[in-house]
Length: 317
Image (cartoon, rainbow, N blue to C red; front, side, top):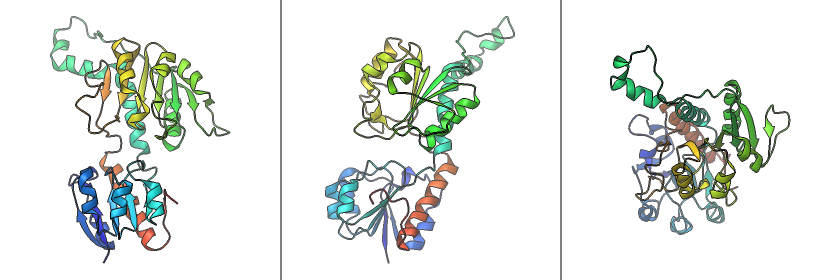
């Protein structure tokens, strides 16, 4: 019987989704969360590991003598040493594309909140201000329409292309910067500097690579419009957080919407904590029940395909 270890099951289900389908493939050992120092011991005799964000370093992998398969319960793979896994003959898969609609929804939640100040108006009405208003409508907080604004989409995979399509539906001008421009698309493909100079909103949908780490730094922020908005739903290290804090503090930007940070959970000394006009959410773009159910369905399919000798969504092949 295969031994299947969930190292951080609490990151995908808080009791609202069943993991029972995986028991069809072996004996399941479930850990809610696994600290880095606990990983080696917990997977030492596992045949299969299912993890979301548990760091599986080269040393940890070398200690797992029976490990044959790692199913990453996410799209991003930077928590696993893929090269070492390949050297050891361990197949690693991920779950691509499952969270596209959730990420897109959050991107436009940030945009409509920052441009419409809905949170401030809701709080004002809840405080009784409308009851006291001498006029039928009052608008102390700025409201801007987004139709006609220019949105710069960095990265044009499944999520970036969907963001562009929704922005187009809102009547926005769409600029795209990507390593691999596609022909036949109704958007303007531009270089990175042009995107920074011309965009009212810059939204990041690129993977974390050595080239994209700190892509959005002080130099990049200096090229952006005054009053622009930055949105990051990709990976935290794509943004230099100290430089972003400085840009927010000095009023360079109207605001920022961030679902990812360099350190997660948020570090005690995170420079963006308490930053003005900065909406930070705790990595929830993928967290809708339906989205997580889709994630688990694909992950179980990946495992079944591997056991059948025809692995899919392999990321270290």
